[in-house]
Length: 409
Image 1 (cartoon, rainbow, N blue to C red):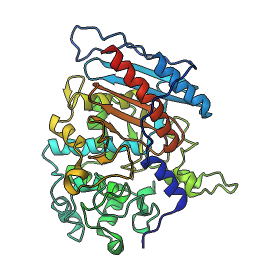
Image 2: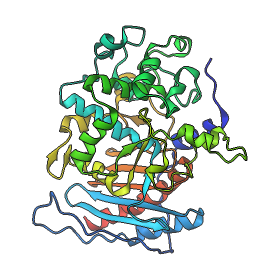
Image 3: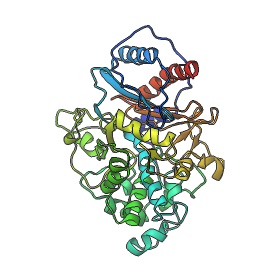
Image 4: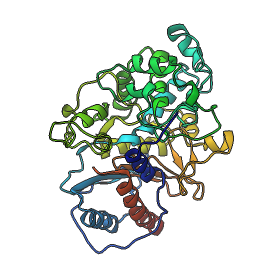
């Protein structure tokens, strides 16, 4: 039967149980280089004179109080484009980061592009895509929308992150098609599966299976889909996917070079802002393998604010962007997440049911992207720590940033 593993359970609990959004004050300032506002989409008008100094001070104060080496961030606005990019502490604005579960909205965007192209129906049984290549079985009736809303009933990270039949999801020496096919075809998970669209179970093999569906539907590799959607589509040239988990485990802190499960889920110290330090892989982690800069991630957030447009170029349809933001678990089965402040979940987005228009996609390493549609802005802050510290940072700085927009608009 499915069992929790305590180090992972505690780490995931810090991700899932995000604290409430309480404002805080700060009196410490630090460096934070800012880019000039971009007005693509704003016509000839000039952006308002937003003052992000208190926001930057709050971030720097948090870093100092928590002994963090640095952070990077970006703030974008639906009308005014990129308003502010910054590096904090020892980190530059263009430092590359592994963003863990903040990969999810990026991955769903690739799937939704296939929907726009007529290559995939996320509400149809995946057997309609996979049966010719992988056969028909007990998982044939699952839907991609169920997989990426954590509602498929497959064993999840919160059930058991080391679940044997899905362990290939962590193996950089595997292949995405091979891993996804093994998850699709295995019968060993039958006693542990739940009926789809009955309960929320976060992460795990269901995401790797969704990536395999994308490859079969498109007849392309995941790397090619990333390039077409975000590198070519949005100019996010630093985007790429790895699979750092086995490497993190094997290069852990033990004297013999071996690691623990906690090592595998902590920010990989060997990455050092350089994707070349990752093992090459054809089995990218669909839910947690993205690496990028804050600025390039901000381009994707701006695309979501602008209904699928990147620099005036259509990357996703308005319908695709809106679909990702729908509270699918609430609509389908009155479900809710374990987070008291982000109880809803769409396709990759955690949804704040108490504050309509607020969405987030936090990651296990402390990255937090969010949209605030009521204020027409989005932001991304990324650190190299863990989900609990990232949630605390989000809690501290979002009210400060909200005040900037409320007082200027």
